[in-house]
Amino acid sequence: MHPEIQAMTAPYAKLASCILAAGLLLPAFPAAYADPPPWAPAHGWRKKHDPYYTGYSGKRWGNDYGIIQGRCNRDKIGAVLGGAVGGAIGSTVGKGDGRVVAIIIGTVVGAVVGHKIGEMMDEADRACIGHALELAADRRTVMWDNPELGLNYRITPLRGLTVDGKKCREYDLVVQGTDFEDKRRETACQTGEGTWRPL
Image (tube, rainbow, N blue to C red; front, side):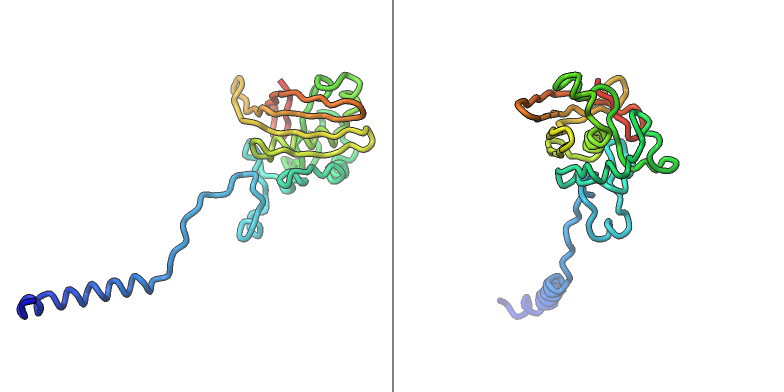
């Protein structure tokens, strides 16, 4: 290279080398990730500062009762519900708007496996269904057993939709017992905060 050209380009080469070196020394910034989906369990900062689970309607729930892991803790839900019965659960459990579990009201299992079993279905089972509709991800199956009735339940929310202005979810419900298994695809809509009713 001609000495004059080399003398003119030397400062730029030095500058380029400095910029490159500085770039290599800068700490790598982690990629920005989107917020976790509402049904994701709280970890790290979120667990410490915002330990709630956000439901389908945006309501924050303090306990998922095992829904996130795919197994509804029926015993815990039953202890929380205590003596509350029927559709009143949606409005009586907790203080103010501090409802602690969602619930499905109306005819559920009666349409699936017969009126007698539908009548025997208890409030903890209804709460497992309601809370699964609130917190389970699409295509995520939630299971539980009712040992008193000898029934096993599996609910799988499939998709969200709007019907007559109401937030709804389509789901598969499977009920198994002695000598039978029945599966139906149903849709339930929110009739209030934490309260679902099948169409």
